[in-house]
Length: 218
Length: 47
Image 1 (cartoon, each protein chain N blue to C red):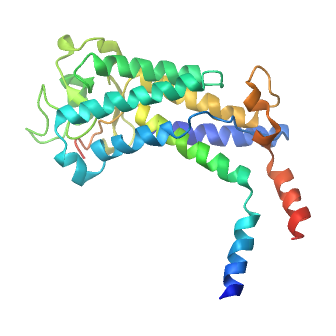
Image 2 (image 1 turned 120 degrees about the vertical axis):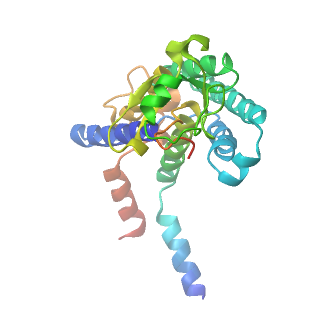
């Protein structure tokens, strides 16, 4: 959810930037866009959709997590010329690395879980087991490979149920999403790719409105 | 009935395809960050 806040913040920042600079909204023509939902939907089934996640064995869930992140890696590679994608790719690679090296799930230490959910009843989580049906697995800090890439940071604002643990990879992904959306209000094509500069991919709310008025007379 | 179908067609025709592409791209980006990131653990452990 915190990553969606980054998308929302980036979108708002891009829109404000476009409005302040009175520029056209621009969005890059992304290649292989279908890979994003193709990666998200299996993960949604495995980790979010209750009926399916209860049926899936951990091995299969881990396979889905790593496999879908490889799909995302292909998506990033196909769009590596776009602004923000090198950050998205870096964050993805860091998450994928620590996940792949720790059995297919994002490791989290018992100390972090204790801080994350201090009120959790005993037996809610155990060392060596997945943390509920999330992408995380609880491992002793000493046993975590690349512990510095694991879910070791906490966002503790709000109630305890709203607390979130996240990794440095998540932070970089959030920055990449913000960077990409900031370019919505870009004052000029700059060093962006050809598809980003194409007339088809740039438009403004004002020009859209006037075009529609011309076409439909409303 | 034909009136309603015609009205619906006109309404849909007014939607600029660039808006549709923008929304599709934004939704796909949201899906990307949700799938690429792994901040799955919350204080409501396991929910």
